[in-house]
Amino acid sequence: MKPEFISFTGADEWTSVEEMHKLSGKYPIYWGLLFSPKRQGTDPRYPTGDALSRLMWSNLRLSAHLCGDYSRRIMAGESIVDTIPVDLGYFTTIQVNHTEPVPAKIIQFRNGWGNMRAIAQTRADTFPTDTSVDWLFDRSGGASIAPTAWPAHPGGDQLVGYAGGISPDNVREVMSVLEQMKGRYWIDMESGVRTDDRFDLEKCRAVCEAVFEKGEA
Image 1 (cartoon, rainbow, N blue to C red):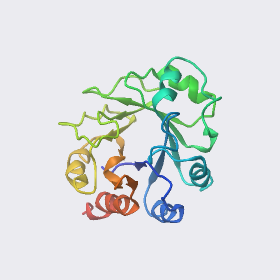
Image 2: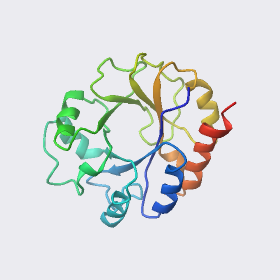
Image 3: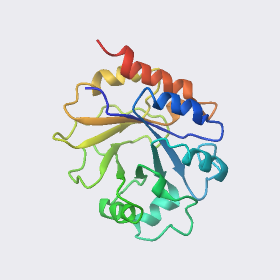
């Protein structure tokens, strides 16, 4: 079974919206934008306000990935409306990157912006039983570290994600395992589609071709 979509995370100052649209027109893609109050505009992976505006007005399928103090405050039940630089209503999904996520807190936060999908990360050997959020298995946290094994799909109609060390170099090997999953899933990558710490759309293209074209019988 093929993934329902691929999430490419880390579009930045140099990413061409025109080329993103070309890929999105051919493959099922969500584009993840990273947010952190300490790293925004200083780390290449966390775009400046101008780049965020350009990307948010693109009409692409976007996912907001909330990191650092944003995720800590969400888990504490605090508001981040006064500090987050964008209207999250522009996004199709919201992902809260926290090592100990509480689904109820994420849903409470999400409900303040709309009814978009909510994603939480897990590092456990099996996916959590709570289905109020979509779970992304990710022990890497953007460090491009591949796991020793991928957890089995929890079954039923639940949608789950897999991330960690996936790149154009190994995506077919990864897919040889994940395509055996009996359920709905997506794959996500960040460091594996960067070159010299810039988001690399050619690597995104190579991944899509390997997953959706070359891998088909």
